[in-house]
Amino acid sequence: MEIKIKNKDGVMLPLAETYCEENIVVTVDESLFDQDYTTEDALITREMTHYANNRVKVIGTRALSHFTTLTSCEFKNVETIKSYGFYYCSSLLELNFPKVTTIELNAFSDCKAATIARFNSLKKIITDVVRSLTTMKIVYIPNIESISGAPFADCTGLEAIVITQTNTIATLATTNVFVRSGIANGTGFVYVPDNLVESYKSATNWSSFATQIKGLSELPNDIKEELGI
Image (cartoon, rainbow, N blue to C red; front, top):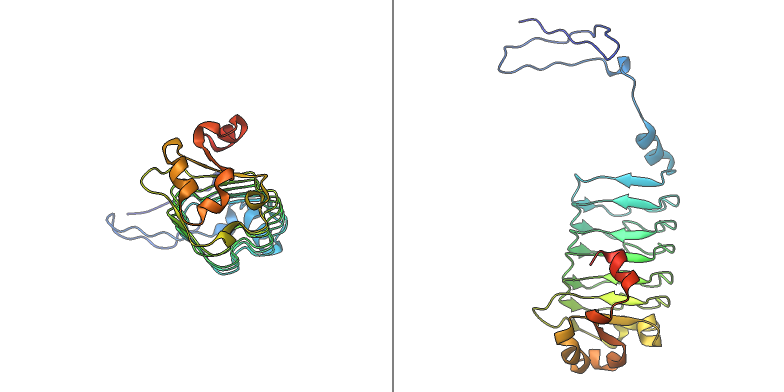
């Protein structure tokens, strides 16, 4: 059996090997093709503004640290973000990770342009997730079950934390969770299911922020539109 391969211009490519029909393996000289190395070059020079990868499930330690020109990224299947994964991505505008269940220490430190965080699958917060991100306005953690550490400390611009799960009240390990944030300063609110508002207001540590807890029915329309809920 003979195999012939042509490129898009009809030029015959060199044949590597020929096997039986059940197991054909062909190697071609890729230099004969017109290659687009834009993304590869941008990764090396750290000059990319957008990056999408829906294959990987883990963002490694410092994997994208100091990508200062990165304004947006798409990782639909990432489940774990290791320490300093996005450290000093100072132009990144949104933290959108729908399948993330684990976020390690300082994963988003100095992402100082980010205004919204979406962690749809996150159930436990044990590290400083968005700490000191003063531009952060909205944090969407619909299925959160427990919060500890000081993940929202110094988020002075924080306007809304949105929780939608109705199975249980998310536990709050300490009032330091919101220290010096918009929630603690009285300018931001935690939005929870309407039927759980009073339970949240009287729950351990949540009670310290009772005046800042509201029902989802009070969530401003612009935030609903931003989150698509």
